[in-house]
Length: 197
Image (cartoon, rainbow, N blue to C red; front, top):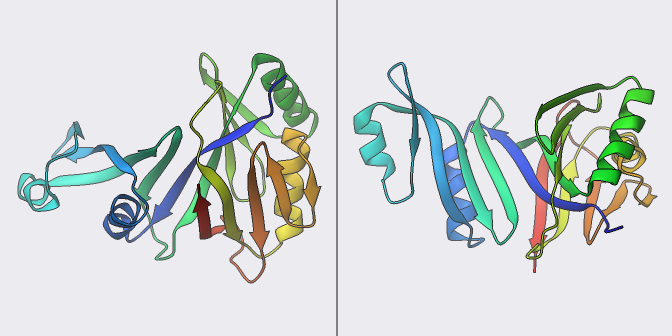
């Protein structure tokens, strides 16, 4: 059985354009698409169209999708200047998915299974988990640092659900380290730092 793999995180921030630009310009991510509305119509806009052009069309962003290898990051407009994590995405096999869902149900956590091979778990710790059946070969995310009010409690939920090793606020999710660090907000953890290969 393969180890679970951290491959995705979804950020919420009032500076969505700046965060998107950082991922593309500084970290080398590719913009996949921007999703939102023009008037009352849903719109998905491919890369290559500037924000100036989108503003002229009256485009309102709901989410930008970015990728680097098999790692994906979603950026959504929200109220926090410093990006907060809405959910983490983890790839696993079918047996692991069943095990995680069983642990979630035993813990009384909310579980939704909206599509084949995909499940969403509300952890009760300020962030959710998106579980996907997949085996990924080009993961470049090595470390993800999340600032929160209670690092050990946030880490314990993640480690317990995924059955991953934990030391204090550190959780080993496959090859990636998720480190919850102190002096952050209650609720959704803040993105503090990340490291890629």
